[in-house]
Image (cartoon, rainbow, N blue to C red):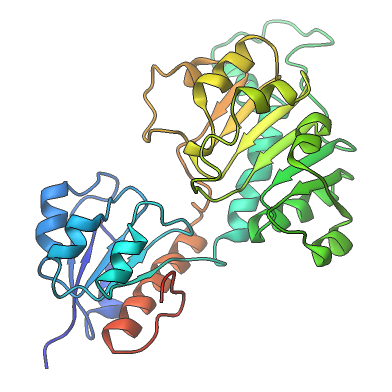
Length: 322
């Protein structure tokens, strides 16, 4: 009996291939960081039983309709806005993602980004590397305290809760806005549920961890930034398209907010000449929220597990659709 065929859209190390090659016929794009060309992705999709994808891979109706043998798309991410879920369901194709395994790691990155932005860490590092440290003054690269400040979390899922847990160690006041209240989180983390408007108006740090949906698209727009404190710092570790970047740039330029820390952008990769990249009060990262060796390894194994389960006629471990 032939093994199920799988196409992996990024190069994985040989350890992963060896672990699964006895039960799966694994084909793989040969570049780790470069996206697979669309024509190769579509060609492979027509031949395989499973696709192992990442957020940058666009899996649309046309591709899914032509992929007659395709049974599962395993996306190496919590988000799956790169995949047409309705079309996948229509064609009887399971879509699976990698929730839970990256929550703690992404929260680590989120709080690190908050701290780096507040304390101007990248500016200070550049200052030393460029040999500008000639003398000392009492307000040299002075940043903003984190401890005992108010943290506003928009989107209180697993990552939001993990972020709040870290904030308790800094004696921060925690408030959140979510589609529904989380009584257990409120009790465990001493977090207060507030309206979106109140959160914007009263938080010293505003962190967004919402998924990208029609409702959250450009949630942080001109109106939202105008409601925030002039001393507020905005952190985005969710999706780039939940932010109107033009409005964010204007808010930073006009002093409507103090600074921003961004791991995600409207268009990725972001250009080196993008205005946000060249602002001293903005820390930009290349979408590395879950990028620890341990977590990325777990994510790969979960994708493979979903592929093995579905191609064997069983239910995916972490399905997105039914």
